[in-house]
Length: 226
Image 1: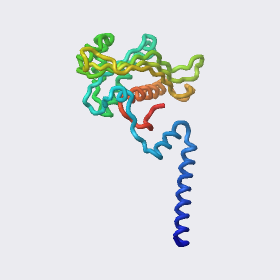
Image 2: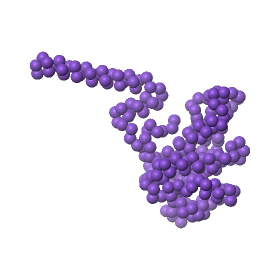
Image 3: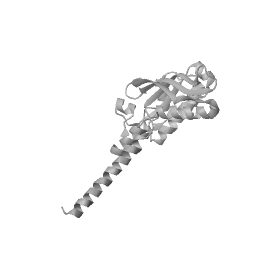
Image 4: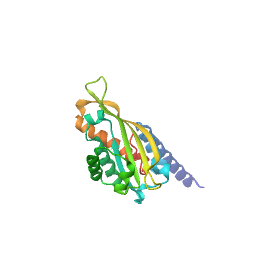
């Protein structure tokens, strides 16, 4: 290698080192989980990860071969404060899943059933009525937007159980997924004067419904709600 080639090679090496250094600097200044998400995307892209439901059952609901029905229950204390929360959550989750190619029983039909029957009753009867392959039952045990002992702070907190029943495999609904979740939004309480309760509740419900819907479809790491 002559002197010119050596100088050109050294120049290319310096440029590569500079590019790597700048990339590392960009990653190092990103806050929170963004650091790991961006670092992962830099080296590995942004691959999809299997949903918890798919890992448990091997079924990819986005293939559109199975029909899903979503039901939601909540205690009277929650319903007294948020009377529309059951159907609101069903509607939001249904919309998100439809955009991913999942076949979902229309939330209006589910709401009508609930109005006519007063409660969900037997899920075998419910699934037969709508010819659903799976029933997703979200049982809310806690739902709050106020911070205890504070009149000017708000933070959404929700605890729930998500049970998924296979309604076609055997003669009666069989549980194939069962887990509990605790969610907070945002990570730290915020001042009420910065966002009205109506707008805050809208943001919280969007966060919650997306997190729960992602249990059912494959998604990228950058799409995870934290």
